[in-house]
Length: 277
Ligand code: ATR
Image 1 (tube, rainbow, N blue to C red):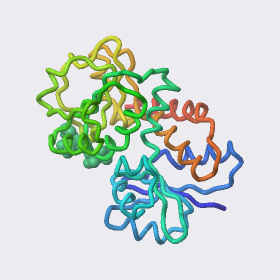
Image 2 (image 1 turned 90 degrees about the vertical axis):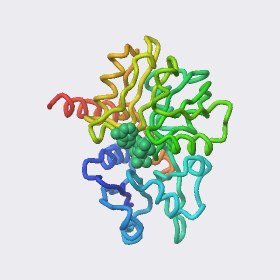
Image 3 (image 1 turned 90 degrees about the horizontal axis):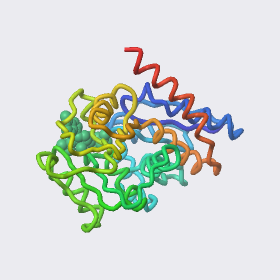
Image 4 (image 1 turned 45 degrees about the horizontal axis):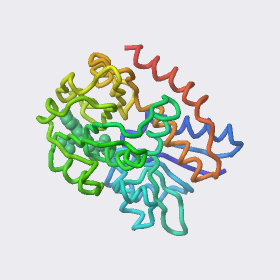
């Protein structure tokens, strides 16, 4: 039996074990996939003590996972400075980052968005934002405006992306002057603490799409704002979660699973959880 796990904290409610178990059943692969609670202090020790062949890494460990790979990372993980997928490699680990491709696949293939030449607003400049920014650029967007509470972090992310013609860092108080965006991505963890930064309605219009990288309760405030601002689509991060998992599965097992049935099963469950309150 092959063993895999997701490491993070809090991780007990992670949907990854369910997703990978469904993928494995579909692909005829025998595996066990568990959730292992790990903090920044004990992640390396817990990973070393586990006998997993591969792992997913979630909050707040993606940058630690990157460091742990000691340079043995894919180009997209290097660009993101963060790793969400680990593959055992001799005595060490190979790191990859499937978050960005997961988001782009969800937006383009499941939701039919054409990202080419789009004007995109990225709210946040932490690990989640770093994970998706390179893939958005690779998808051919016109421009990426990064807005973050701490302006220096937005500047640092814009610098790291290395495309000064297309990537612009702006402070939160500049939002009212930025005009309308085709796609608005909430990559802040603000709503996990309950407070969304004030967003002017002028950022969105009837052709805009908005996506929150989280799902469930955490996505509710931003998606409510997006609907109030008139966005044509207001999407949560559930589809991205399933798509990034499929890319991890492909790396580990050499097969890319069919994601639609798994997404539909989880969608029903996630919607029931949000409306249960
Ligand atoms: P993650 O891996 O989820 O991105 P992170 O690296 O801690 O976690 O980043 C959290 C992001 O949410 C950051 O962009 C953070 O802004 P700061 O860089 O200013 O900390 C943003 N964020 C968190 N709480 C916020 C709040 N209440 N208002 C606005 N932005 C917030």
